[in-house]
Image 1: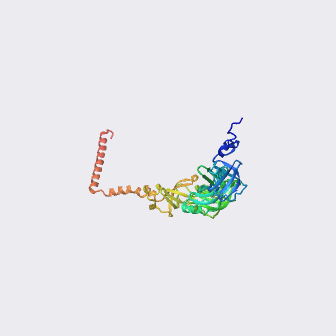
Image 2 (image 1 turned 180 degrees about the horizontal axis):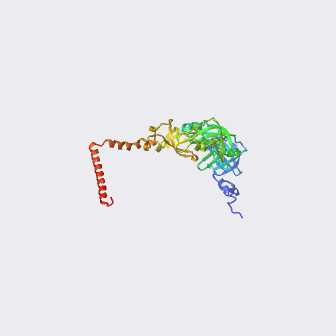
Image 3 (image 1 turned 90 degrees about the vertical axis):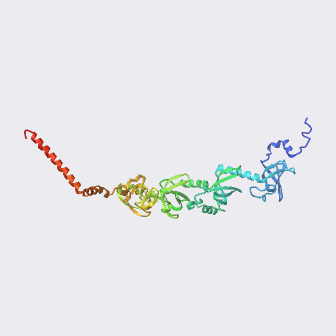
Length: 424
């Protein structure tokens, strides 16, 4: 027999009803999502039938989902909401579209991160670190380092104001990105345009291989090299060491933006392609020993002065180094020896074609300092003659007297020996 009060006494609240009902196990707790049907819409509230168990209400700022309003919601629509309270002052379940919408978005972002799907974002703002973007009504961040070569702000000298100006020019545009990092607790959403670009780039680069010659236009210059645009939106890097056989201070000394050039592919590494200009021309160092030898005197133009010496242009593609130790005595001030742009004579003191190195000594510079002139060698003889001429008369007479006595002594000894010999 059933206990009186268990079935006959009605529950005092909806919460107690849930606890005595088998459906309780299927009803989410506070903070969880529920699905219901819209039964009434007013200017301030939306009433929802939650699975026939109770009526929920969404009101105030909880009506806004991810920055969007609820104007499109109508009676009969099936909607999702987050449970804020199981029962409010009116006996209704307190619900929120806002939390439900945000939760759905974060869940979707985690899915996008895992799937690596490419999605569009709208650029909202710019700062020195990158771009603030909007992805499906949620704000995220696109760092400068995650921009494609097309959008990366290549500014000569790294002027921060010009970089920011370039980034601001993208506000309002739509970029295609991949979700790079998601952290709901810290409300962090990081996206990457470069990651999306690299995927497309990899597909295109499958058509290219090392040794292949391509033709394109110099699209940008940087301290470390030049970028060449070619093919179907491809951009490769020509490192500064691959621009010319001679020493290059800056790519702008050899090429300019807009120049049409040919380059050979050195390496394809994932979405990156590395090129060379100089390898399409003969290496002048291969035949340098046919023209030059150690000890040979050459004429060269001083291209640059460094604390350790002069860089000298012997030929347009053959450069040598005159170390400071080969320019004069220790403590030599370079500006006092020669100026950039001067043409001077040098002696080749070392030659290493494989390493593209030529060591030089400034003629009439270090050689003078090391005492290699002919004049000093004649000085001792001049000093000896000067000493002879400077002898006084009495000193000469004394020397003659000593010489005479030696001769007489020697003659006397010979006479004595002759007398003592019977056979003589």
